Image (cartoon, rainbow over all chains, first blue to last red; front, side, top):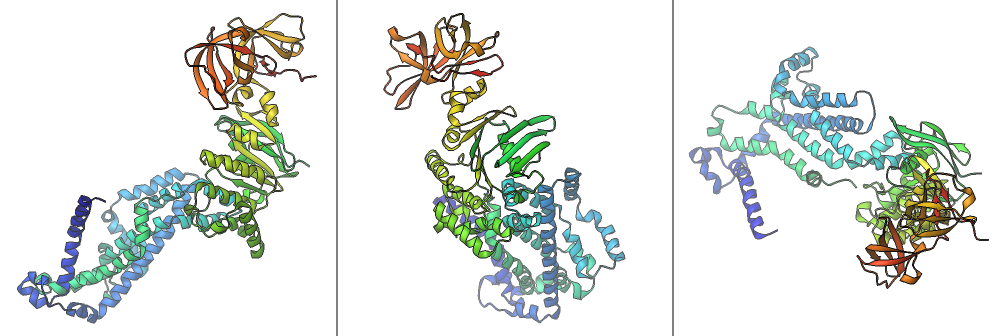
Length: 269
Length: 365
């Protein structure tokens, strides 16, 4: 890479990283000090007081757990359903396959807001509000995931299926041992996107979870904000933001290799 | 008992015929090459044998047992794919073990079969690698190894050399030739490369237009092509086919006149030829030699000179416009654009009837 490119990338990275660093520095400052001067974030002394306050708030651990269960459950469900559907649409011959696929894709055109009222009513009638299934189920409807996995399965050469069939593999063995492992980069990408979207999801949890013990982190943190929080508790607010984003950061670090490979469009050979 | 028998195989895709009443019988341990141009149906036939395509009617028997209703894995066949089709996420060892594990073979049997195949194919040091870490030639060996360990009754090779560069192709061709003597199974190879087919096969099956055009030993296909398609398709450069007029004569062999007026005496018996209709004379390049003016039977204008080192092919045009391919010595002085004399030797020439059927020189007494 040339020097000019290095400088360009460096500037880009600095622009991207600046707000994050600013947030981190603000979270390490005492609220009282920030009330006097928000520019104090760039000078010592720093403190972990805001983080201690978060951990002392007894509900926060529960909200974190709720978010992990809801996001994890949604991700697991989406990966399972989308892999199966993607395999079926890409490889199986069945009546109305194309029509059904188009039907699934139409789901992409329907905004969440358009169906929120009937969805709320349905979940109320089923008694699913304030429950994990109530928070997880709407997230499992993933037309994008089905489309994504279908395209990925299609990109795997059919010769591999044929080789496996000649190797005496059953359809399940073929799916489980040959094709599914090859979709791992796609699974990682879809998994991270789904986890992230579910983790940041605010609107549906706000509607469905009305009891504090079922709040997810986003709803819980919002409910904990006081009036004028931005002026009176800027450091605390930033500590909450950092705290809420940590799990996502960890997920990204773990799956970084798969994500980069999938983004680079590494082909299956 | 025959190894493989194909009986009246029919296959259509919608209204398009792909295979039309194809029948073939293979001997045990025979190496047969399916040779034909793209779209001739040769790969479809191979896939029908493998069980990857269904057939509309007909029967496929392997060692006497009908197999067309069986799943691919239950047929006792193994296939080497054109693009190898190795499982990219498995090591070489796992690739070779996959089929055996599916067959629930004991672990020590799997290990010993793989060890033996790896030794024969000289891939022992690569067993822990994944296909992506190997060269094309090495992957090809693994693909062959994966087929060998299954100890099938029939090997199916789908253009196995087409992905290799020229040098590696020659080497692998030699190895395949040696390998076939080590395995106790019949082999079918699909190829569009006639040199491959000529080198490796006991018998070549030329497929074109959804039908078997001719099945026979390589030299029979080359020297006694059943029809004008086989004549043109097999042999490089292609055989020259020239419209000719049959001359009246006392001789039992046919003499013909080319469009430019030159005459060729063939060794094709006159008696078997059709009574009417235009004939075509088939001349391999080795039957047409560049000759000095005194010894030449005709003259032609040179359009292209192809120097191969040991010999030279001269692509020329006769005075009536017919393209003809001649052979000359390696250090030929012939140049493009000049007019040269050609001596046409009719001893090995062929005649083709209007329906394409071939008539050949009578065997030497």
